[in-house]
Length: 515
Ligand SMILES: Cc1cc2nc3c(=O)[nH]c(=O)nc-3n(C[C@H](O)[C@H](O)[C@H](O)COP(=O)(O)OP(=O)(O)OC[C@H]3O[C@@H](n4cnc5c(N)ncnc54)[C@H](O)[C@@H]3O)c2cc1C
Ligand SMILES: NC(=O)c1ccc[n+]([C@@H]2O[C@H](COP(=O)([O-])OP(=O)(O)OC[C@H]3O[C@@H](n4cnc5c(N)ncnc54)[C@H](OP(=O)(O)O)[C@@H]3O)[C@@H](O)[C@H]2O)c1
Image (tube, rainbow, N blue to C red; front, side, top):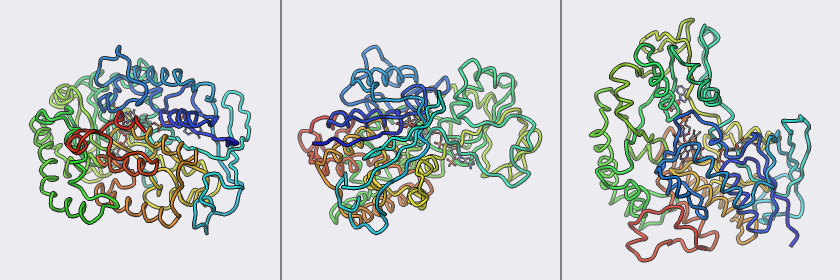
């Protein structure tokens, strides 16, 4: 068979997995990454970053963590070494071109607007239609155009394009006499430089996601109460002090089929629907069980940090924050090395920021926006065509079938965009699925069927994650999601031996190794 040219954009874990699975199907892909190293977000983080999920849930299924890594939650450096070993083991490096920025991709083929079948024919490789991929070598600044039969976009959503709140004219950082930066710039500094940057400075961190939490902890450990760090934030999220509420591993509560029986699922039939309705008190009970453990372990009420929403909602939105060594954090809050200020919005003045609700002025020399990233914009902007760009960003959530394929964007797959509670594992499933599609082992349904399925998932995400629905999270529904991929690939959906094991045992990456 004449092998088609596949181009992969991004050499983070999703791009590496896509490369490995394409190679395993006999393709000869080329991977471009703008950085000088592989690993994506793991190349450079703030000093204290570790894996949030236990490592048995975040691993390449055919490449175990080395025995030398004893920690359940490896450090960023260990993570990076593991990623390098994987790439070397599967000989991926000859396929990867680093310091190669993909400026845009443009399609040379028929219009996709009126299709009833993906790519017009339902084939993964239609008779006409190619992508022109414009790539700039960031060393030499020369640009070259590569031709591809298929493009896999693995751009990631938590890197490169910062999300910075917008302010009315005269209320933004232009007024501020100190420095306002995004967490991305802080993370890019080497560790000594970052410590020197905040040392003996009044720092405000905006946002209380995992990045905001970690940066505030770093500032507090450097500065103590003499130069407190204030976290200004909108909403509380559940902080997880450990992965075993009241001694029961969280994986038994959110990573098995039984836990998925308790919730309404996209595309469920009558029986599953009825079961989820009947079992809804148990669903509520599981969330309360975890919340009671967290409240017992952490003084959330004392510091007015109890979230307004359930733990389950945070799990489904992938917004739970693992908080190891919580005493260190709460001691810092107690001794006022870290101050917490809730506010829906704020503005800058010359000497700091002022909260809009109660006009509290917080003096600052440095403001760090730990307000996340604009992943959708990055994905949209890679398309030269504004029509394709609109397909990506025209609705609140990027509408992808199986979270990988846009029904009206030809010969393109996306991996690593929708979040899960353990992203490496799900990126691997998606890479396997896309490579199997490229191999021609299955075909996609009609555009209409794909759109209906996307709408079902959309509805599910709206119900389960509400205002976070734009994040496309499949958190705590990984098994149901994987069932669809397995069905497409002709794999048995039941991955364990015996009914009890299939129903109650936690599922993870190693359950999907066998065909
Ligand atoms: C600090 C941090 C810690 C995290 N910890 C966890 C965790 O513990 N558990 C978990 O499940 N998830 C975690 N995540 C989420 C994380 O994003 C995923 O786990 C995973 O690493 C994402 O991999 P990816 O390859 O999809 O994306 P990325 O790692 O973002 O890789 C995308 C790659 O694409 C490249 N790229 C982008 N645009 C272009 C372009 N135009 N041209 C060329 N190259 C381009 C980028 O340089 C990058 O290398 C963390 C995220 C961050 C930021
Ligand atoms: N392994 C690790 O230790 C580690 C470390 C860092 C990051 N991560 C992961 O990396 C990903 C990104 O994390 P992140 O913390 O950088 O980003 P994030 O999860 O997107 O969180 C962004 C934070 O900024 C707030 N925010 C967003 N826009 C805002 C606005 N306009 N005004 C005020 N606040 C605003 C959000 O508030 P609301 O909640 O109110 O929306 C949230 O608190 C996550 O998946 C995270 O788990 C992991």
